[in-house]
Picture (cartoon, rainbow, N blue to C red):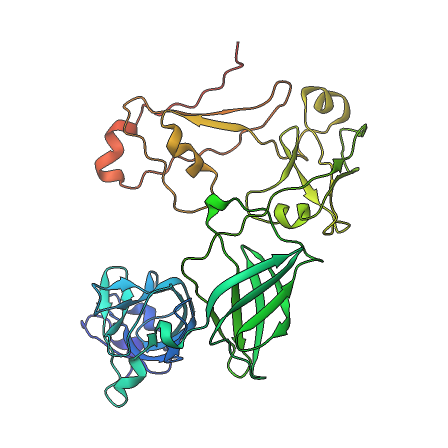
Length: 379
């Protein structure tokens, strides 16, 4: 087929081996996704890394996932990423999936069934409790975690790590019912019981690089309390920063490596140094921008000034800095507002402000011409 010279026909074409040169000249070309296979065909109910192959989608296809058509099209992917034409990976959620269930590729709210008529069983997948590695109990001695349970694969084709929150270590002892991890070098991060976090195991099959997680139910959350013993005192630094600041105590460094945890000095982040270990956290004092340092030492743009946000709907304010996109700030008030305060004597240069409205056609009237940006000195 000469796809370059077909301009005005409304056609539907399936390319088995990729998209040919000139395909973008089609204004009416439709690529319909179809599921061809799921690998592996069985996994752990704790979560498994799947490779999904099919046709009709590529790296620019958005919103791809895998759903269980036998269970109200519930989404099975915790996250998904397209690797190339006709292939994406999906790490499954901790949900039960039977081999008899009908699985589909979804693109947003549109669903596509198996297109493999020659081998329809390749579109099947199951993850059930009976065949999954399960952690039934754990114990913590110092920084050594021992996890006991069932169905731990114990042959040489697997590697494993013991995990708690974002911290992980290699296994030092391993049987089909017991796995031990030593965190004495890296440390365990702090955790409150309200976080409801328990340790788990990540297995990797070396022959095909399939990852899967253990699962557990009813375990008591692991609580790790902070135990700082001392910190640097009497530190005198220039406005340019760079000096070391140290907090002594076990597990401090591991906790500061967790998302949203940090040491701040006058609103600036003190970044961890390579000297940090499980006995102490060492960071380098950041540059500090003040009216005095900017006027006398030209230190006005090297530091990041952290202000304090507030708004007319306080419960929505954390969405502004949670790092999730999109994460909308929702405010039904007619005179809605957001404000950021900086400590006294600090200065900031605001050079870019964007107000993003998710539905401009219906919402432009309340915003157009009335959105204001203003500064205030607090007086």
